[in-house]
Length: 490
Image 1 (cartoon, rainbow, N blue to C red):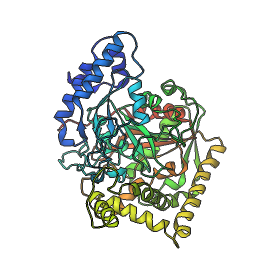
Image 2: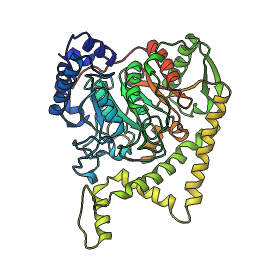
Image 3: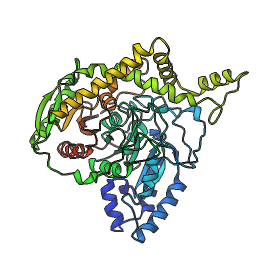
Image 4: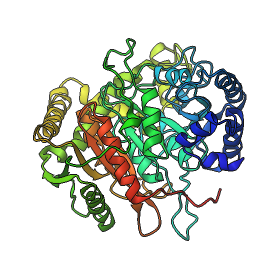
């Protein structure tokens, strides 16, 4: 049964339709794979009974010819998504053993379309991190290793559990969220495909909030086609989310294989950083050559405010986080650490419940929103954000269809290697935060390996609500680069 786990979603859909195997057999194969890979720490809650019950129900629906677009496909769910009657903690101690009495909109749409839930996936606490080392459940381990080394590597963050599980073939796809690169960076580190949709494309309702104007849900999968299949089910208007956009969801899968001839691809000169590793530069050039060979036209573009994106992001995101996390006070749900007064109860609960990185960001956010500093920091960062958005609008106004950049400044690094300096960790988001600041769609696609055999990814940034173009271009890169699977050691 183990070969069932190596299939793509598209292949599994065909096998289920041909009755080559059942959803229950497919689910059991993945449950066995999860059990054998606990050393990766990708799943923090396995739900085998729940998964088998869902699979049996789907098999009955398939037998009647009523299966949906994801009928019988086993998925992993990031622990930021509320799952009804299944523990959801955002990987934070402060949420304790919180069991939501409701389902997030994105996951409810996946279940509507017939998907099966295998369990909840590890992530950085409240999605704050670039390495999946801030989780209360401990770090996730990347299934990839440097050639000839047994050093444990990070899978990226915050959606590290999602990326690790998909890369290690523990689930066929996974939900993830992206606030500053938390889908695309882990995808690049694990040779998976990660899509950050346009802001407002997927509902945020029922997802634990980090920074509300930046957060966006999206899929991580093993191929561009699989990510397109998942995106179609995850996207859509939701009246419960006021930022959700009311426009029809296209058939993203239909964009796979479409010609990219004549498309203009922007190469931003500001992304050529001082000290950029030669292998990242080479990968970027190769990606551009692949798109040119497929008929696309390459043009140099300028995004002059790129250099301000990271500092502006690390003002806006913590400010929104400090506001969103004010609700965790030890009174209504989650952890409660008693005190002699209500103020002391708040202080004790938050001091014990939040990890170091979350406390750091809450303090930064509270500082930049405080009287006397609001104009100097937060307001100025919002103005910079507007300029970053305008840079992209100016590019697209000149007929550019998409922008090609590296996804990360390096390959995956070792667990514990970058913990001492938070700023060094924040620099991992250098190529990804602009996309969130501008509310644009982005896709990370595996494109090659570094000298030590670790995967590297390329990023494509698109026009608002033009994910279809990204899927067409992403598939060109995927076809040229080939697919990578980590050698099994766990």
